[in-house]
Image 1 (cartoon, protein in one colour):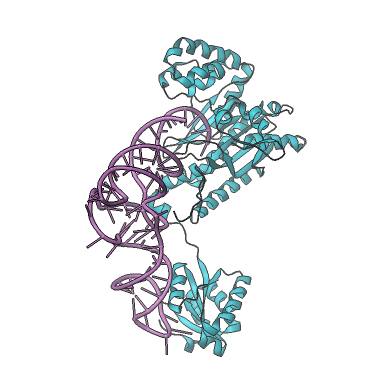
Image 2 (tube, helix red, strand yellow):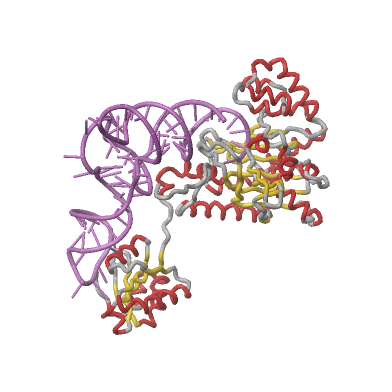
Length: 443
RNA sequence: GUGAGUGUAGCUCAGCGGUUAGAGCGCCAGGCUGUGGCCCUGGAGGCCGGGGGUUCGAAUCCCCUCACUCACCCCA
C-alpha cells in the first residue's frame, strides 16, 4: 500500500523466516542427491523459444498459451523457461556430456519456472522447482531410482501423506495404435465432450484422459497399458519390479498422461491431500525422444520436477499450524551494547568477535541501554557485552548472561573476546568460574 | 481465457450512510540521568486498493478498474 509499484501478478516475495524453511528443504534435497550420485547443474533462465516448441511440444497447453516469450534487441525470440528438463537436455547435448561416463545424473534446485497462468492455491506465474534428470540409459531400474529419490526427499523433508501414481504411455512404435483406439472410443462420444476436449480429439487425443469433466468416460476408455509394444511392456514390468525391489508402494493409474509432449513410456506423479485443487506435488517420467526432438542424437532420459512452493505447503500442513509458526529464531551469541564514548571500542570488539566466529550484532539506532537490552533479548542473544561511558574510562567490558539468572561481570577490554568464547563454550557455570568473583553482580 | 468471493495501520481484523476512522499484535519512547523478559503510559504509522457516480453527507450504496483469494482449464 505504501509503495506505488507492487510485485507482478503471480509472483511472490519470500521473506525471513520463510527463507529458512526453503534453505532447510534445499539442504535435504542436496543431501539426498549426494546419496544417489546426482550432481548440480545450473542453467540460463531463458532459452531460444524454439527449444520449448520442439521439446515441450507445440500442442501442450504450456507452450500453446502459457509461455513468457519476447523478442530481444537482437531480434531473437526467447522464452522464459516453463520447466527445467528441456534446458538440461539442451545443455547435455551442447556441452558434450554424452562423452562422459553414462548415465549422467544431474539435479537442479529452486530453479525458477515461468508460466502465464491464473494464480490460485499452489499455482504461481513464477515458481521454483527441484528436479532430477538421469540421461544416457533406458534401464527401468533408473526410472525406479529417480522415483525412489523423490520419495526419499519427500520423507526427509517431512511429507508423509503422499501417494505415487504410475503409468506407461508407450513409445512411437506402439502409441499410434493406442491413439487410434482412443479416437475410435471418443469420436462417437464427441457430442458429450467439453469444448477443450473437442479440440484435443484432433490434436492430442491422449489428453482426453486428463479431462476432469467426465471421469467415467476417461476411466472406461482404452488403457495405454493394453496397447504397449513388447519392448514397452517389458520396460514397464521392469520398472514395477525395480520399485518392488526397493520396497516402494505405487498405484497404477491408467488415466495418468501428463501435459508435456516429450514423455515416453514411464510417467508418474506424487500427490498430496493438502494442496487444494493442485494435488500434484511432483511429476515426471521418461523422455527417450526429447534429445532427438531438439536436434541431437537419441539420448534416453528420465526425471522429475517438484514444486518447492507446493512442497513447503505440504510440509506446513503436516507439521501443523503451531509447528509452522515456530520457525527457529536467528540466535545471537553476543549482542554488543554501546553507549557514548564506548561506541568506538564497542565497534572494534564487534569486529573481533566476528573474526573469532561468534555470531554478533550491535545497535545502530543510538538507543538507550534499556532498549538495546530489549533488542538483544528479542534476537535471542546469549550474552550482552556492554561498553558504556564507565567501561570506556577504565578499559573494561561488562558481560551479561541473558538467561534467567542474568549473571553479570567485568573483564578487561582485551580479554572480552576470550571470556565470551569461554562462556559460550562452557555454559554459564564455567563462565562464572572464569570470571572474577568480586566482579559478579546479581540482576 | 472464465466464474465466485474479498480489498480499512507493518500483521490479524472491527466499523457497513452521519463529528477529527478504531482494537489487538508488532515497532519506537517513557516509567529506571546505564540493565532484557512481565506490567503500565505515550507516540509514530491510514489519500479506508484506484477512478467515477448517487447523496446535504460515502470506508459504508452503485458502476468501472486493479490486486488478492478460491475454483474451472492445466500443471509443479
